[in-house]
Length: 119
Image 1 (cartoon, rainbow, N blue to C red):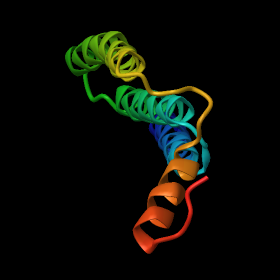
Image 2 (cartoon, rainbow, N blue to C red):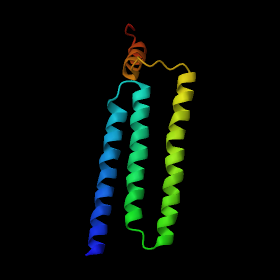
Image 3 (cartoon, helix red, strand yellow):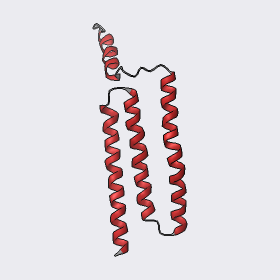
Image 4 (cartoon, helix red, strand yellow):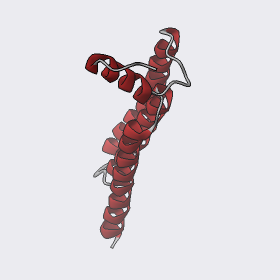
């Protein structure tokens, strides 16, 4: 009975990882500007991977394995947001504008290549 309960909880964690992953992927394609896309990717990466770690923690066969997984979770929760911050900071320092959607710039580049007028 206890094993069945652990497996059900792990499946819920894995299903939530799938939902967070798909949501972040949709956000990467639907959000207009680079900073929103970066936030969607960061949130997707952090929450989906954390949910997978949580599922593996629930299914850990021994206390030693659970301790290793907890250590990995700890370092992951330190490094993933820090990495996203570093990328965002470099993007900001490169002069990427906050308000200009990428889609508009891509359309202008496509118009120029086709010989049309750019806005």
